[in-house]
Image (cartoon, rainbow, N blue to C red; front, side):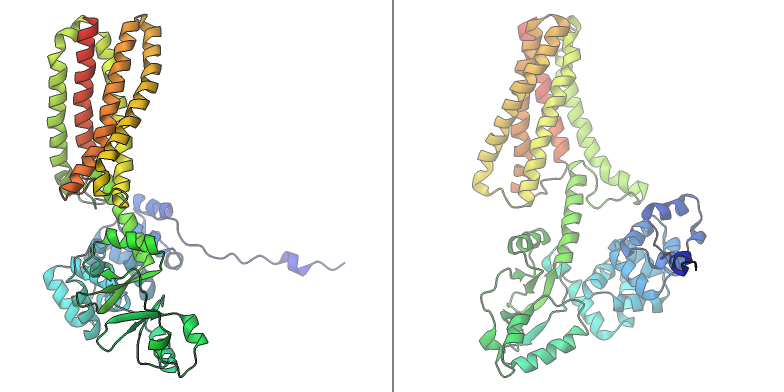
Length: 460
């Protein structure tokens, strides 16, 4: 019986790209030269960009030279703008210029804005004049505004065009634009007048005028100076793939796309988390040690001062603690639960503020609600703690002191956990900026004072 030929053939094994851990292994083993160019070329640009963030400039250049330029451009687009600028400054001018010209204008602008002045002017003179003009215009906007994150490449047609003319114009634009989300209708001064869908164009007659078939009820129009967090809220509210950006004269100058919003959300979430703990908002593991220390030290000094105040409260009750050591044993329990209660309120309120869910008239109610939650948790957790302490010490009054202290301190912690970010927001500051440190200092001082005061009063 003839052998089944198909069963003897070896299946084709498709090459796969590197995982991030694979690349880190090459770095740890100091074997960057062993990275395979072919395999690197099919690795996710995001993975490679994350890896490059751990390398010095020379090694970044070495890795990028292993792969074709078009793939290198995708990787540079995924990199942190400051890291990408460092790489472009060290590259040969021709290669750097080609990357800047191939990038989307908003990505090019982010990188150019991070260049040293001399390099910025040198590269802007070398790239295509039209691209250079666009980049110069974009870097004038605040990086955290709609203008700073928008792309000026917009699919737009004129209101007095026929459908046939508009379709021809869109076909030409399709060769230049990476994505066409919506087709915006403008007059010859670029005033935004309406929007027309692909379906409307397909269903309309070729002789129909765009102004007659467009939709004029527009939502989600973004002023160029709107903060990027507010832009993200608008995108979430309307569920559009892109939002039009207009200048002070209502002229259409760009769009913000949903992939830009994803980057903003990730950036803002990371920034809030790090600021809440007193680290730099844009600090990374690869930052110079001296720079990281410089950013963290001021907030640690604030923490040290608050710790001295908390220590001062304990020192006031030194005699009572010496007489009744159970106070020293239970003191960290009360402080820890108070801090955690406040931290829960803090996290919920900061998130709500970021999403715009807390309005000016609701601040008092938010604080009261979080305080009441802390009170109920204080009763429940306090009863458990009091029962355990009573069982171990045989002293019901000690358990009662712990119960009362937990109720008071956790009620206070819930209230102040809501109050701190709200008052920071009112002052025009970032609600996340080291709010955890202020909360810990406050709950420690009040928790120690309440517990030791009750202990001295009821037990001694």
